[in-house]
View 1 (cartoon, rainbow, N blue to C red):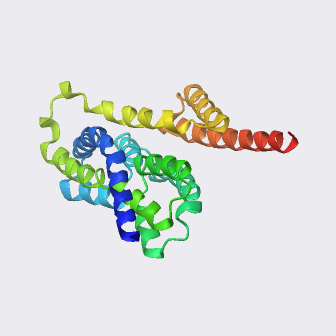
View 2: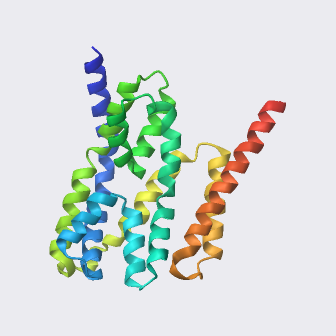
Length: 238
């Protein structure tokens, strides 16, 4: 019975994650093309994708490498872009923290924006789920995305510049994040963090090597945390 319910949650996750394939495909193709244009060969491109498995960080690193930024800046920027994964992990720990170590290790590797967005909404709306059900759902949500991301990266690297610019594959990155913003704006603290990050990123856009994004991300996290503290204090006094 436990296997049956976990299996059903896997397919629920699969269905919830499936719509993201429409951005994973062009996103992967675009990264493959971009990687080859930057000078990476197919083996290097696929190794980069398989080991990092974080599209936004991969794009940020390649862009900086193309701009001949110092290695330290490239590493710091890629890590900063992926700092949100640490926040995702902290957010998922109350729900998945008691799962077996090997499952948590695989989940850590497969934690991406889409799997987190689907999972945290489901876990919070269905608190009665067991840990095996939550883990099954998490893996289900990322299953449609992972193979397509890797396959499309390979195809993009092989096709390279033969993909016409008229396909406008660069729409995938902003569309992916826009699709996730709405469902995750559930509290005033979330809204404050997003607005502050956007405002600071606009002000710091002139800073070289995209360092303004790092500043904006930090500012958003600080603002969101402070808003959460203020809201908790108000609730305690009420």
